Length: 479
Image 1 (cartoon, rainbow, N blue to C red):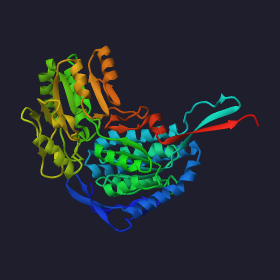
Image 2: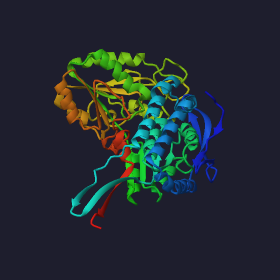
Image 3: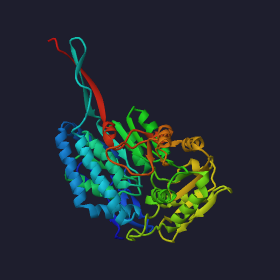
């Protein structure tokens, strides 16, 4: 891992550029707390330039054939594989993530997802043409929406960028993508790779802060704004986009319930849930961090989960024995610590509950029991390596508590009873329900939530269709 300070740049209209006014942001490696790069703090002039480039490139890219767009995306996937180690190193420096896990758990799915959308480009579906009125034939066209303003988060900078640009480009749109101000490095490298494959202006990267993202969303050029981020950020985007009726795609926070019934294999459930809760330091909207356990096995489960937490290791990216690295930034460390500091008297910290080391933003794997449904830590997203445990009596109470939050992204049910699993999956008010597993995602299936977790889908044909618009064409067949 390098400590050499370097200067990252925007990628606009096929070239790398500094911010027009020369402003920069320091970029910190969260595993060390040290500044390793500077990134543009882009303003209105930079956003204007990127939007103009994307708008100018759109007609030609729109008019390429699906086969041509597929070929470009397949080339991008191949190039990501060829430069995998560079991408992995940049992502690890961005986030402090373990190099080995980034290599095995993130890069392969990213490449697969790009290849999926490459195939989807050639499989747009619509109703068949037909005569729904005498003498007139109707057809349905699916078309790209136009320029897409996209804002990616800091928890999975590379993968979330893929989830955004791949369906957008496959559908024939052009893109202006902003990475998080804390994690721009891997996105800038992706721009270099993609820019060698697609025409200039098709893919643009603008670095900056919240004001940069706000300027993108409020800009008159984009037809669509897409963000993965907090509920607050999503609300602000939706409000801004409403002013000129932009289409909005939101993937926001989560508070996934993990409902464990008393017929579950406790050892297997604890093993899987601890990994799904602590992976990526719990910085995942779908993380298995809100566990509800049936009262008859509660104590045994908590003891086993606390032991699993104590056996889970966090540390530097080059340590092959760690499951996760640091929290992404100093503010996030403060937020996670604050939840633990404010725990009510009836809560019990079974494991962890403190910062680890005096360098970087590491936090110990933490388990908290004795919690009640209206406790802050149950209702609000921690976004850290903290698993809470509640005890429930029966299926009805489990369902009430599982659904009793404002988020609705993902959930899981752990039981050997098939009928109960089917009832729970029907009644859980979440965009995804896993049964006897938690967190696997595949390119072919949709990912997205309800309620304050947002709307629109990532991945799958549904995610692809979100980047298209529908046009009805009717023609007389009587001359």
